[in-house]
Length: 251
Image 1: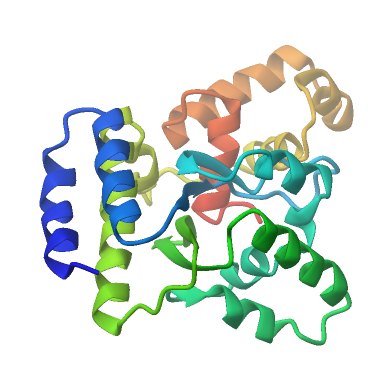
Image 2: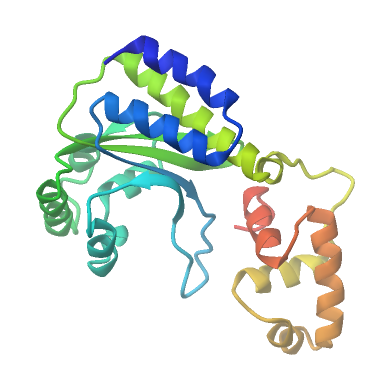
């Protein structure tokens, strides 16, 4: 692997003027490094109370084997994926085999092994994952897959830097970075009623459902929600909930 190319990529990504250019430059270098498949994923805050939670991550960029996303979804591999589970606690880059070893006595071991067999059959024989962390936990990750490749410590460090640079550059160009960098002012605490409404909203309730729970009108709920969005600097209710999770207001 050409270390100089990775260093140059860090500079090139900063100079990209649109998201498409970032993806093109990233794909070109990753392919040159021997990784045929990759995924740059932005992680979605999960609400454990919700019965039908949103997907754990949203793709910012990626290239996977044909039909693999459909197979992964149809077989519900996200529920047992050892890499996803390991990633929840990982503080640094890791190789796929490390995740498999960590869960070798897990109740879902056979399904995990079947997933790896399916992945191998689609050309993903080995891989690495690079976590991207923020103040309150994981924000995103870069997954690399293909033929087995032995990365040196220097190469791992540079690819970790590339992952962070690509992620933040894409968010900058999409205008989405400020939402992750916003710090809530200490002098704008939420009232008890606002916290109640925020919790119910995080559970997936509508204004009408919340109004029945709190025995107030749905118009009053909407009034509180407008105030919450102003305090949290959120564009909509979904973003308000996401920011509340990110800032630790709800869990």
